[in-house]
Length: 134
Image (cartoon, rainbow, N blue to C red; front, side, top):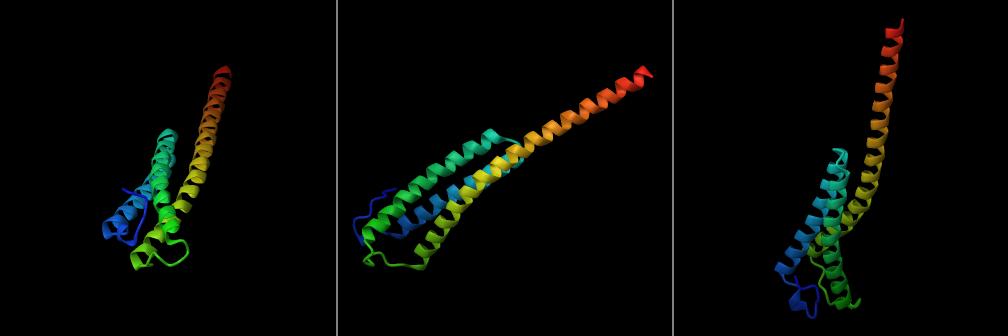
């Protein structure tokens, strides 16, 4: 997708739909990353975050080009679809930040649960040994 806007004619319906799809891909990757973390697949979660980041970089370049073309002069007509896309960009950027935090929390929780499980097994093993010695 051409991310450089040089005139109003560059802001076509196809351009806007492509931008919306890109931001949708980024959001989907972030959401799937959190699901992977919940399953305990931390490496997959990080991989998905990187995929989301790549889509967000492309979206941000396009958004920056739109802002640059507009120059604060109202050259870009704010349509309902453009407002919708901007909303998706903002919520996806927030989703991405939250995904990073959720993944970190899930990883910590996973490690704590593993330690707790190992501790319980060790405790049970010690009880069995004590009973055998009686």
